[in-house]
Length: 182
Image 1 (cartoon, rainbow, N blue to C red):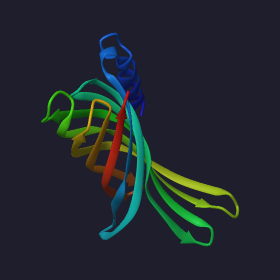
Image 2: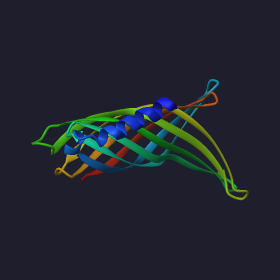
Image 3: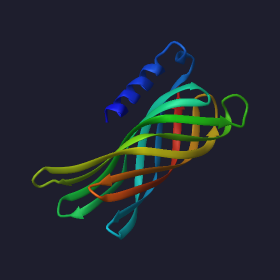
Image 4: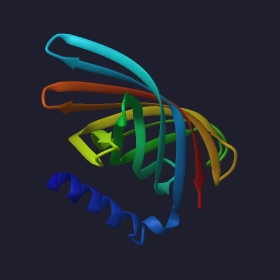
């Protein structure tokens, strides 16, 4: 965990270095669905749910950025005031290649980093919250269109994994994203 914090701090400091000031900060919102596969002792189950992730970061140039994100990948009502949530928080790097003039037009890219997934069960009657966390690498690919220097849309695929006390979880998220750069 300390290595993750050191990496995040180093990337944040690099974003404010004098060389980085030529780039652009950005915010991104993604909405889609997650396919969650759960495996335990030979038993396997899969379920889909809607997802929403918000993030931001800094483009050092049109091809390289650092990013952070937070979002909900899964939410299910379990009955009688109980809910199960799967939440992600992560930090990583992004690479992007444009096929248009300058920083506009069609693009493809990829991202990778470290994500902390938290499985949380909430019981509202007695205000009880129980959660488990897992920190593992994540990766993803995306393609889309930048309409101008400040605005673009993308289709995204991301893979996150977690292990909660011997329960293996794989989350494949497919989403549509909008990014504003300033």
